[in-house]
Length: 387
Ligand SMILES: C[S@@+](CC[C@H](N)C(=O)[O-])C[C@H]1O[C@@H](n2cnc3c(N)ncnc32)[C@H](O)[C@@H]1O
Image (cartoon, rainbow, N blue to C red; front, side, top):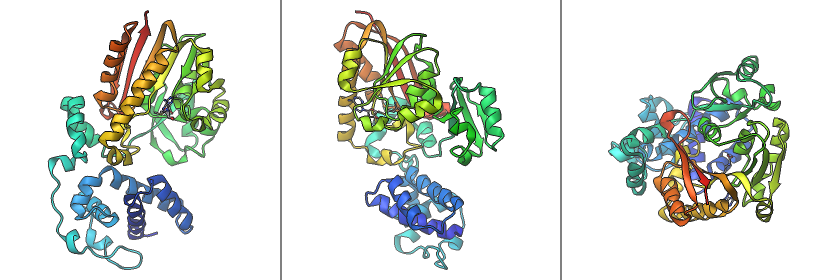
């Protein structure tokens, strides 16, 4: 595909997303219908689509319309590209700009940060002086991180194994197991290092959260919101745990047994009733469903689809999860509450409310990361049951 034909493909996909299709589904459908597209084309089109979704507000303003064409046009203008050469109407290229596309407006300060208006005061209140820098960071692609599975390889051995397959990775300061991939990221899935369980794809901040947990040999540990099991498997790197995983939607844990086997780890999956039967635990991790505001680089649709009502519902679910998990911890044991959000109402405010509701708990530590630290935005509060 020519560069201009890739733009046309991205325009069509973005139009479907703007009409309500999930981004991954729109990309998959296009891929199935476009057998002529090679792997380089698919990767380039995907990047165009996700870049436009991250910067939807500012690109729409610069492109003169909130349409697939407007977003791609705005992206080209933001990058200072030669729009005339690409939007030329020849072959598979998009038609030349017309109507409002010819009279773009400069984005306002808030539009330049690609921040929804209603969220700006909440994000400003939570991020303080870092607000603008964090919002800017969320407009760009996230680095690719790996977690070294220390049960299978040392950090140095994993770096060497990856290098032998053309994947260049270096340690990242956020976590002792974290590697940042600087070259060859697209080869990871096909690599022996990945297939043999030496490394997993996992954000560095996620790894930092796990590293901050008290993972003591012999402890019974429950990952209460396990999802695909990213943190369950990361916890397993800590020696000699008895690991349990639960999720309100057990289908989300579908791949966990196979992933655990690849990593050489034992995990028991528990239903909600099982969690009560198996309680108490030494440590329960509640990696709660959240707005995802710390990971909008990876999942930019969430920035635009979040509404006040949806956020209020998430906050209520998080409070319920805190109460459910607090009841599963033994006296003297720990509860880790984590979100990939940077909003206080999902983080510190939840902990203050829990401590007010339940006097038998104390706060042990707090970790708050933003994309300015390199990985996703993440929050962890570690609590101990004292009564
Ligand atoms: C942030 S995701 C977990 C990600 C996962 N821990 C990881 O590291 O890959 C939150 C998970 O919480 C689950 N969930 C939602 N409500 C829940 C509830 N009331 N109890 C337990 N899990 C819940 C969701 O199904 C989702 O899989």
